[in-house]
Structures are given as structure tokens and as C-alpha cells.
Length: 224
Image (cartoon, rainbow, N blue to C red; front, side, top):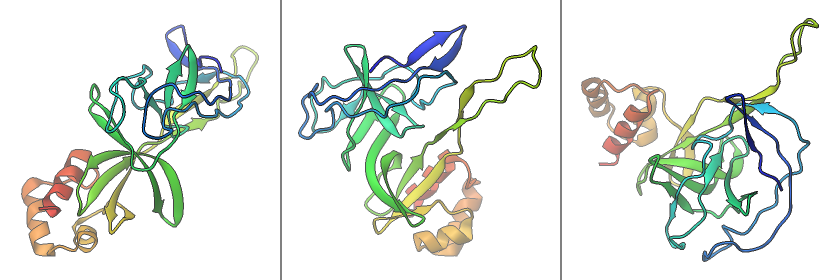
């Protein structure tokens, strides 16, 4: 499997190839850092970036793992953690409840198998609030969109490109996942709290149900 990140004229483009491997490259109590299979993909140029942690690999802290683990980055398009070994690119294997802390960028990702909207998915969520009562997660997503064909012979066709999709915010209640409430009435029902008390908190703190810092503040309030 070959390196997929190239920099061309200041724009990020990606050329993807594949390889199968099974060599353990770092100590862990499971198989998290076993070299995982990569999907075989036809080589072609894609503009933009699928990474929400930045294109470079970052130091991480994983509880129960060796301190000297591989640097990682999160590929939101593939919903995979990537690491590099000997200039080859691999995915980590998903292991439930593994929390990956990125100290330099202030993010914690948790690998989970979860059910939302009637569908069960195994993937990574950003952990925003960790609590036995209500936890708050963010699902990051990047889409691959088709480039447009040129309408004349003087311009080139546009390449396919990565585009950041809207983040999905989820809360856990009794081990079930729900979309973050859109207003005070929904929040009072989901969090099973007194609506008048919640309305007072929302009004006093000017809570915006679509802003992440306010979402965190609200969940921390109902957890008290």
C-alpha cells in the first residue's frame, strides 16, 4: 500500500492504493494496531481532505496501551483511524470502547458499536461529555462529491472532491443514542427534567441548541 497524500500546487490531492497485512506493529492488549486490510481503490485524483484531525499524524494517548503507540489521524470519509508504518498507510482495527485522546488538538474519539435511527453502526464518535447519566457525542462526516464536467473545450473537468458534511450530535440515554434535542420542550422530555427549571437555565445562559459549546453546557447542567 502506497502513501496517499500528495501536495500539488498548494492543493491537497489523494492517490489511494491498497495492501493486506497482519503484522503487529505496537503493543496493545488487543488487536487495535494490527495492520488492517485496506479497500482496493482505483487510483484517481481527489481534491480537498478527508481528515478532521488535520492531514498530519498526531500523537495520541490510549488508556491501557503502550505510551509509544503510532501517531494517528482520523479519516472522516472512511470513518477510520490511520497510521503509517515504513511509509505504508494502514487502518487500525476497531475495538469497542477504546478512547483515543489527541492532546494537541483537544479531541477524544471513542470507538463504538451503536444504534441510531434504527441502524447499527461501528465507528468513531467525538466524545464531548462523558457521564454515567447522559453523554454527548459528535459524529463527524466527510462526503466525496463528483466534480463537474467542463462545458467547453477551453476548461478542464473538475476533479472529485471531499466536502465536510454537517456534524451530527448524539446523546446517550439508557445506552441508546438520540439526536440532540432542538429546543427546550424536546430537551425536557429527553433528559426527563422539569421544563420550568430547564427553561430558566436556557434563558439565563442564552443557550443556542445548534452551537456545540451550548450543547455541552446544557448536558453538563442536566447531569448535575
